[in-house]
Amino acid sequence: MRVSALVAAAGRGERFGGDLPKLLAPLSGEPVLARTLRALSDCDLVAEIIPLVADLDGPVADFCRACAVERLQPPVLGGEHRQQSVLNGLEHLAAGPPDIVVIQDGARPLTTPDTIRQSILLAAEHGSAVAAVPMTDTVKRVDPSNHAVETLDRSNLRRVQTPQTFGFHLILQAHRTAAQDQFRATDDAALVERLGHPVRLFDSEGPNPKITAPEDLAVAEALLSSSSPGAPTRIGHGYDVHRLAEGRRLILGGVKVPWERGLEGHSDADVLTHAVCDALLGALGAGDLGEHFPDTDPRYRDISSLDLAQHVARLIADQHLRLQHLDATLVAQAPRLAPFRSQMEQNLARSLGVSTAHVNVKLTTTEGLGFCGRGEGMAAYAVALLVPV
Image 1 (cartoon, rainbow, N blue to C red):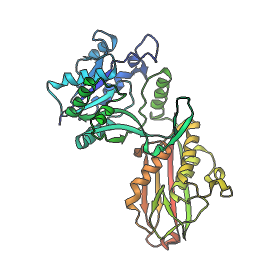
Image 2: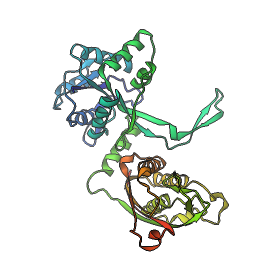
Image 3: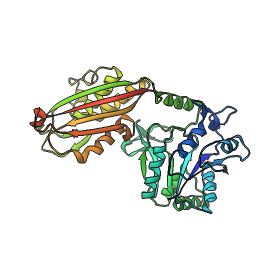
Image 4: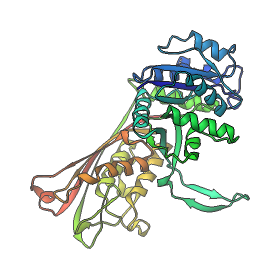
């Protein structure tokens, strides 16, 4: 499998301003574009990296020619807009086509080699793979007068990023067809969708912002600083227990588990999510779940605990922190929960605004010992690590 990478670096960066192209702006001591190129080079599956530039005699092209990055090829002239630039790059590759092509924004300097690698492996299997992250804000559709007309189900929505990786002939056909029809889209995946080919999305690893305005550079700088060795961290521990009862639904990590009994409680009694929230509140130094959502308040009767987790996630963001990792253990003698573990991790990750790479759920029994072993209830433990942004 031969893999080529095209780096979209032909934008004018008008929203960034200043005399220096945004791709050459310093980020933790080196240009933004250097970090993007190095991430591609550090992925062992990428055979060649081709920058797409606005001017072959311009500063970005000069930088690419001087940049000491392995497998970096001479720059190729882009077009008037991003879609034309990518098509130019694909036509350049067509003479000796690769099997897979990675299309990466030059202005995404925090993309990890692991994310790039995952996109390649998924594209080899599915024909396409596009990095994306779940929506954490409520999204509304508006009319021309800017009045809300519909609240969209954010569980089915994703914010799409790069890398966007495809089988070469599929993406070349998609771009050629769009050019012939004079069709413009905001990303490459939309052109593949237009052919009727399904596009596979996956969660990118870690923050993956695009540098568009100067404040984006400041955010990227802070993210790099917070992930550096020695950065201050916040750790929290959570524990919760609920009694099993007849006539109640069993909800664990937001998953409705079919069983004859459920957990007793004022809310949906999701013991796993409650332990997670307590761990996060502990890391914040913000008390416990009962202080924020008392069981005497009718507003929280039967509420989804994932809604409580989203509230806690907003508290984390308000303190300029982010969840680096969450490890939780669910203790239950029965029923068998292994088939639901992955969905629990996905639900928690979505509610907390992180990828599943940052959430781990373990399942265990007590081998018949204690109240969990006797089937009287369930318990959960969680440990959370927060780092500053």
